[in-house]
Image (cartoon, rainbow, N blue to C red; front, side, top):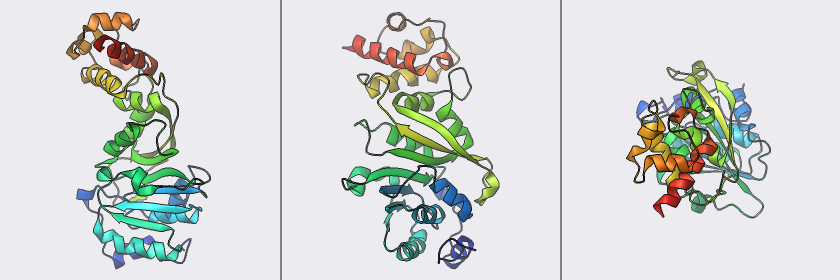
Length: 285
C-alpha cells in the first residue's frame, strides 16, 4: 500500500536498479509512514520551500510533498536516482525540482530564491559521509540569522547526540558549542538501523535545529571556532595547557574571561566559550 499513485519504493529501486552505494553514503528509508512522520517534524510547510539533500529514490521527498510542501528542491549526487525523482515530480504536479550535483558546492540562497511569502526549511536524510560537513556549512553561514528557518536532519545517533550534548558529557564538543551558540537543537526522533536499506551498523536520530540570535552576536565566528578547536583538540588537558596554541597569552585570556585555568574543555559552558572568544578577539585587536 502506498500513500500516492506511485509504486512502492522497493519496486522503484528494483525498476531503476538503485542499489545503495557505500561511496555515496546511501541508506534508503522505504517506509512511507516513517518518511511522512519525519516530514511533519518542521510543522506547517504549506508555504515552505524545502531543500532536501540526498533524496535517493524519493521516500522522504514523497513524504514532504504529501505533507503539503509548497515546493521541494532536491540535490542528488547519484545520477541513477534522477529518473525516479522525475517520476515523483510528475506525480506531484511539478512541485519537485531535481538538481544533479554535489550539495557541498551549492550556493543555496541563489538556488532556492524564495518569494516574499515563502520560507526555506532544510529537511534531509543526509548521506552519512557528508552529513557533519553540511551541517557545519549551514551553521557557519556568514550572515546570521541565516537564509533558512529550520533544519530537520538525519544523522548517525552518535553525531546527533554531540549536537545536543551538555557540558560535562563525553559527547560535548565543537558541534555542541557551534550549534548551541546560534540556535536551539533537539533530538526529534530516533530511528533504528533496521528501518534502512541496507541497514547501517548504527542507529540514527533526527535533529531539529532552529536558528536564533547568537549568544553575544558581536563575537566573530572565526574567533569562536579557533578557541573551541584548540580547547577540544586536547580536551583532557586543562585550559591553561590546551589554549597555549593560540596566538595570545593563554593565562591572560583565561583570566580575562573570568575562568579557572584548571577547567577542561568538556566542562566549559557555551556562554563561557563565547566569552573566551570575545576576549580572544579583543586581545588580538
